[in-house]
Image 1 (cartoon, rainbow, N blue to C red):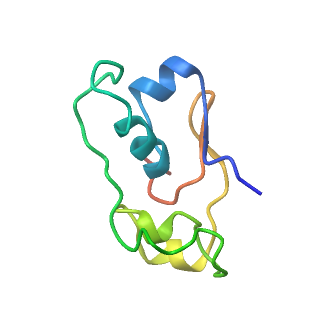
Image 2: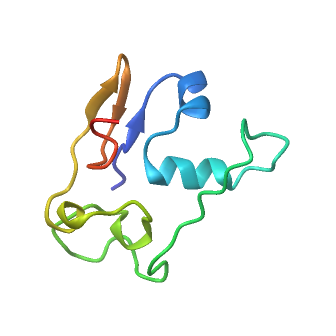
Image 3: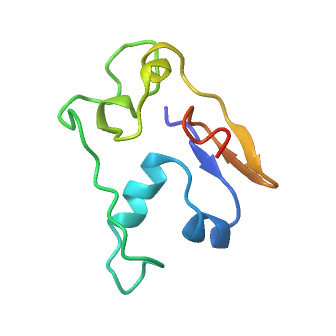
Length: 94
């Protein structure tokens, strides 16, 4: 089953995406729809199936922002701004 990695208002999500997966999804939109020109293409082993068993973050194999803790512990949704929740070790404290 899928998991929430980011929840907020639509406006906040498009202007301030915090999770690398959200950034990648928004970067896949045509330029006429996106709010910016940034590219957030995934890196790493994109061929690895996300359901492969391991302890850490499910986006780890495709994440350019991953750090050591990402391989050890799955992140939990935490509030990074009022009403903006993100499940990413790197997003916490931004």
